Image (cartoon, rainbow, N blue to C red; front, side, top):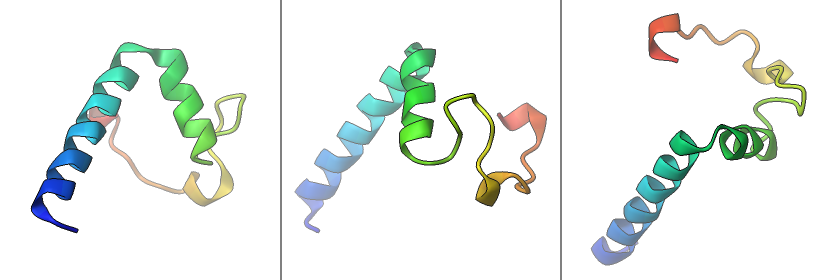
Length: 57
């Protein structure tokens, strides 16, 4: 990956992050599509035992 490709990728990633931060419905759909949560909002089995401090979520 060239420096330009990396820069473009990071720019698109930042844009996606901003979009998801502003739209809770899109953020939930992203997590469902990624297989991290179920459509009901529960964590899927591989992610249930992760320890994430409440202040960081």
